[in-house]
Length: 252
Image 1: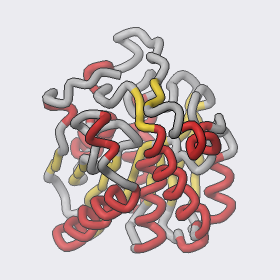
Image 2: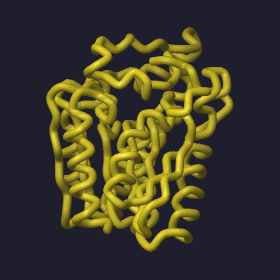
Image 3: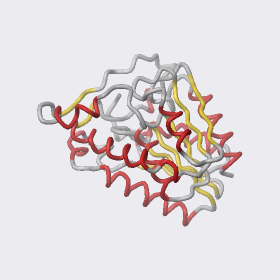
Image 4: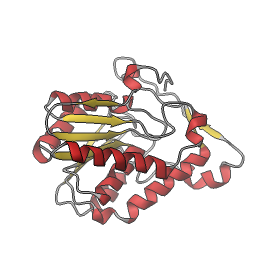
């Protein structure tokens, strides 16, 4: 994962088109670059799209230490309220932790749709359970580099930290617990897109969410080739098509 946050793809974006819009929220240690291709796709289909940058992201790992779960949530709430004043209908979406933040928005408000990319409602590994102890011995954990060819994985859209402060994992875990405790409050049509090859999120996550939300429309879409960041992986065209289809059916 590169860390060139001066790259145009890593910047927050707002793409104007119709009066129905999609809010796109990147994940833990990521940047708007991971959501840009989805934003471009829905914009090309006639929707407006806004990708935000969460506090403490897009700068340095040290900067992330001074951010927090409440600050990330406040940024999402502020963006949603701004969009609600500007557009007739607003849908929410997020990748990984961004999916948890999108769920929390759907619990608080009434978006036209909720679209989740590999939401971390349950981790594949137990690093979150170890972080309260491990943070006293290890300041930062590092990610294993992804092994994809340039043609399969859009590296020009992969801008994020190569690791994370262990203390911030607890912030993410608290957001996860908040979302899980109130899932029944979600009534918006919900689409979950996850890969069978996801190395971070447990395969039970989509079913956990759909079994507990109150939405009458809840769809799960599986892909096979992508890793956790399925928005810029080999299945990205299929992912974009599903998002556009869902937006046209429930958020137009």
